[in-house]
Amino acid sequence: MKKVLGLGSILLLLQLLATPAQALVLDVQNGTLMGASGVEVGGSLYDVQFKDGSCYSLFNMCHSSLFAFHTRAEAISASQALLAQVFLDGLQGSFDSLPNLTHGCENTLPSRCAIHTPYDTYHYSSSHQLYNVLAWNALSDDVVLVLPGAVFDRDTTSFPTDTFAVWSAEGTVPEPSSLASLGIGLAAMSAGRRRRKQAKVDRERLHG
Image 1: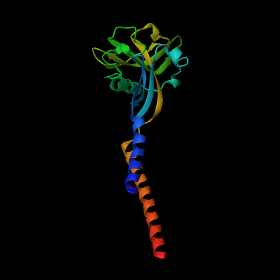
Image 2: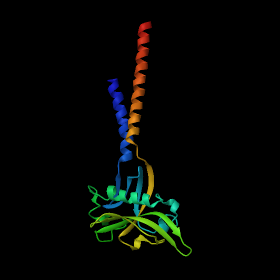
Image 3: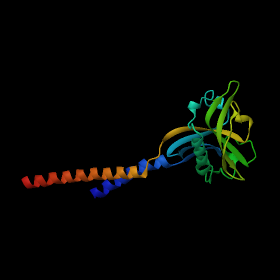
Image 4: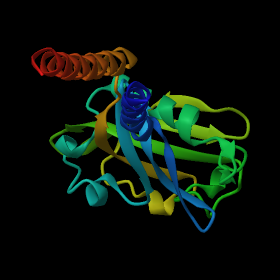
């Protein structure tokens, strides 16, 4: 019985370690998709919130150091993750079929919503440019679009089909091999304790 309980404890621990880190949770308020947590991008987990505004207002005067992603490739991966993991039809809402259920796109036709993930800024002598990647969630087709330099202080509040994705890092996705190694290590420790305990009992019997 003790061996079964020990193995059960190990399996329970592995489940507790793996499940929360890999579970994507949607933030839905009054039927509107506000964001999500546990979005996997490039082997790491992120929280994302959909917010109307400008880069200037959402990222403290549009400091690129506050962006979660800093290359076009990373922003493309993040936008692809939104389309593949977040904007899906499910029990909480038809966020793929009805893009206007996403916060920032409520006041538009239900046909499309463009979610901006910024990754860089460029400062000219007389103007500033913001570089975004769009997750284009639309009835016709879901695509990822790379934008050329956009207006630095463009406010999505004035554009009913557009909103920003504000990302924040959450953690690293545990590798299955790491979890397996942990399980093997715990099992070995448990077996070692049982052997030492049994050896002690045998010595006491021998000298008793």
